[in-house]
Amino acid sequence: MAADVYRIDLYLSDIRNFFQVPDVDPFAGDDIDLSGIDQLMDALKARPDWRRTGVEAVVHLPVTAAGDPRAARLPAALDRYCRIQSEYSRRKVTELRLEGRHAMRMGALFLVICMALSGVFEKLVGAEGFLGRVLVEGLVIAGWVGLWHPLDLLLYSWWPYARDIKLYEKIKAMPVEMAFDRQAPGSAEDLTRLAPVVREEREA
Picture 1: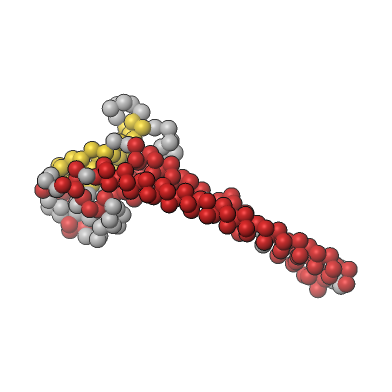
Picture 2: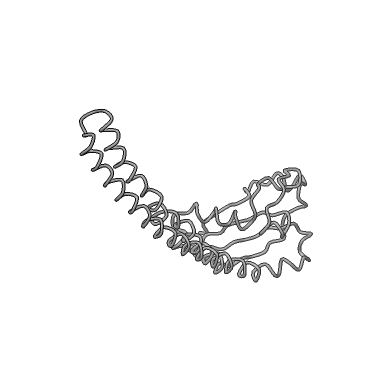
């Protein structure tokens, strides 16, 4: 394997746990309540350079799962899953941007109203006394606070979905190898593995 390709090892007790969250049962070898795809995404997110480096995944399953036909269908299922999730994330990005523009119009209108009311109260009550300062400055602050949610939608809320689109595209394109080398889940040999559930290593 090339020097700039990283490998992510996933240790699953059942091929179904690649997409489904397993029941946490350390005696059966399942000690993390994350599906294989979620572990894969977490491993990629932990790498700041995941967009630039090549990645491949190795799914380790019990030797008894070698005859499971679902293992052979995993690449096609993963491709379909990533495509559907990418489409969903794109819809969410569009939805949040539209919601942000609508909220910005409402927030800007609220800011104008607050600024106008602040000017009115400043003329009627004055800004020297305690009540005047509370009304005048409070309305100005309230107007700017009203822009917090629109700005959050436009600047930040859509980022996780945009990142997920790139993640799903990366996972969709990465090679996935099946390895039927785990002992029976929960056996002494399986529980004493030195490798963690998700392991990344750089090939020399």
